[in-house]
Structure formats: structure tokens, C-alpha cells
Image 1 (tube, rainbow, N blue to C red):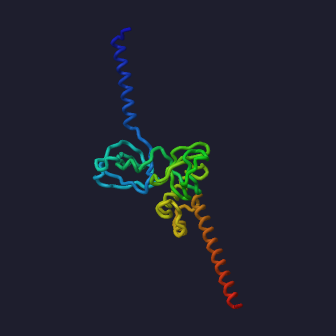
Image 2: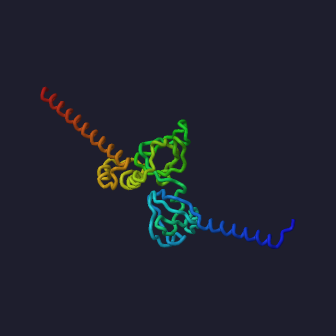
Amino acid sequence: MLLTMKQKLFTLLVISLFLSCTWKKNKNAFIEALCIVGSSPVYEMPEMTSQVIASFHLGEQVKIMNRAKSKRRTNSQLVEIQATDGTAAWTLYENLLTNAVPAAILEDAVIYQHPEMNTQTDKKFHLAEFAAVTDQNESWVRIMGAGKKKEGWIPRECITTHPGDVNVAILAHSDLLDRNGVIITDKLADFLKHLPDNNAELAIKLQQLMDQEVADAIEQSIMEYEQEVYNEDIDIED
């Protein structure tokens, strides 16, 4: 069946409109991502030799707009990003994690290779660590730790995505935890003293931890004192 001239023109018009809408959609498309390292430099241009104009920090969410290979590091990619304030610039793709939700660890949790109890590993996430949720089901969540050092599945009840708790975990990453994500107890009191939100669930758990540390220290001091008194009594009797 041959098409008339009007039918041909109409068909071409439909195709043109479809291609135009598709091009606009792809042009404006972006990927949600968050910074998974302590700090990621932001470049003015898509070259690592260009001026560093700012930096993104752990947990900060951005939009990936485009990609460009960096000449300085052939195994890395710079991506055009848009921050929450609308600023457009470039940063390293390896420092970002796409389609992830920022979270905080509420209690020590063993890491599993799969969402099954028989896949336990010898690694764990610790209280107050920052993490990013990349997958989940009814009972488990798959998470990536800061710096992409740890990854795996943990029980859902060990984690929270509440913004207040996440903010505490982000601060803890730089001010409270050691390189392995373990709390430095000597820093705990000062950390809690300067914490903006002491009502967050994670902040309350940290306060309880400090209270227990103080109670244990007092009990230890009493035991040592009683031992000294006992030793003195023995010496007097001798």
C-alpha cells in the first residue's frame, strides 16, 4: 500500500517530534549520587589540572550530568555534577556512589556476603559508622562503607536512614572514629559535647556508651582501692 504525500509528511512529523522529545529527555537526564569518601575535590573544568573550586564531603548528595575521561589519570573518570545549590562542576566518579541512600550504623553488625545467615564473614560495621544503602529486602540491607572499604549485607535493624542520625555518623567519621571505623573512647565526651543534635537516636546510643564507660571506670577504681586497702591490712597484720 503506497502512502500519499500527506501521509508521508505526517509520518515524518511524528518521527521528528519523537526524536526531539527523546533528545531533550536524554539531554536533561541525570543520575543521583552521593559522596562516599571523606572529601572529593571539585574542579572548574573536566581536567584534574584545572582549578579546584570546592569539595564535596562524605554523604553529600549530587547529580551526575555527564562524563569525561581525565588525561591525568587514565583509569579514572571525571563527571559533571550538579550540587543541591545548582552549582555545576567536575569531580572524580570513583568518589561517588550512584543510586544509594545515606545511612548510619546503630549497632555493631557482622557483614554477610549475601542476605543469608550462612554467609557470615569475619568483617563488621561498627556503631556510628557512615554507610550507603545500595540494595535491600524485608530483613536485610546491602551497604557500602565510607571510602568503599567495606561492603556487604547486614540485618535491617542495625541501620537507620534518619537524617539526624546520618549527620551524627558523618561527624563521627572525621571526629570520633579511627581508620577502621572503631570509636576512640577518649574522644567520646568531647564529641558529644559539641554535637549539634543530641536527640538523634545515634547520639543517644553514644551517650549511653559513654555512661557505661564512666560506670566501668568507677567500678574499676573501687576495685583497685579495695585491693589496696586489703593489701595494707595484710601488711599491718604481718
